[in-house]
Image (tube, rainbow, N blue to C red; front, side, top):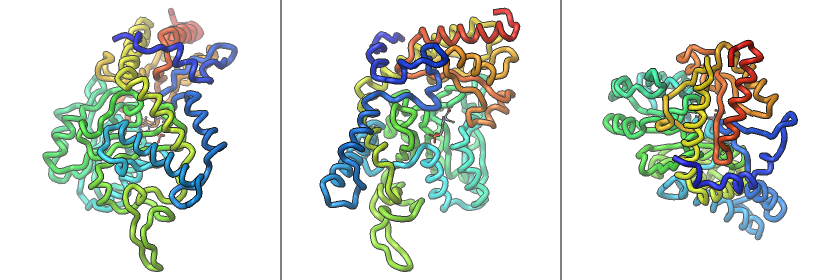
Length: 413
Ligand code: C6P
């Protein structure tokens, strides 16, 4: 693996924020799993929209409304193409991954009966756990959990044993936001098909970092967020097979999602509008188009190769520090570009604060995965996460910052 395929200097020049300083030092942004930075193409698309096009969509008959509607729908088509969806109608825009997953838990949940089972895993983000807990409380359905191996990967034998005729839904993170582990989707789909269960992928961390082809993966639904893939905040995607989405009742009621409204009852608009009640986040959806163009021009396999090289380099450099514990799969092959770690007995928050004083931004805490922290038996971890504009010298800056933290805490570095 090499990073030579990417012209990092040219890419970095597209991201205005990367030339700023933090605490008198060049910004080293290693918090990409939380949200990524935005290229000027996305920023300009936003200002261009508000300066030239701004109008509400799907209702006006004037030029601006037609242009805004066309640009919004063009993003839908581009999103479908980006993930290999069969039809643009299979793309529903939401606010974020969290809302996409809540939509599914709410609508699929209407079909569940007491004692039906929902399979999740021990590493889920709260967004792919709490909505199912709420559903379990409403419906009487039971939650079952795939446990992890020592390396932080799904224990496939134990996973297989969970599937049974009561299993209705399996919903897992395609890539863990803490361990980086990539889920064995093909196996899970095989287990699920044998019992006729619905398969949902939380693709919040995978869609930004690797080629994701929902058709080839064979899943039923997938959810992800634009802001983790160079796009604006406030735009989520829910993809679902057309016949499955068509079969679900609406999530939110209101304008835009109806066909005929009577005093006592209504009928629903065609897909995907049935799931997009009210005025959507028009400007940010349209600007997301520029993010998709950017990633497509680079190529998602190139992004994955670059992530792979950086992750391998980071793991190699971090493991030279005595007292460093890195969580998740041991090599970069079955993990994405996040490296969560603890350093001796320094609290993860102290690590993040000391790194920040050197301009290095990482995340520290439970990463919205408290049950996973309990499995790891730690209250928190620090986490560095990479993207296409990061370079090895920034990992060197991370390592220097960690040595600084070690010496401040009296460790031999
Ligand atoms: N993880 C992180 O720093 P939203 O907030 O809805 O855009 O994404 C939620 C979400 C769902 N699943 C996974 C696997 C995620 O990583 C995230 C977001 C961020 O790890 C913020 S907590």
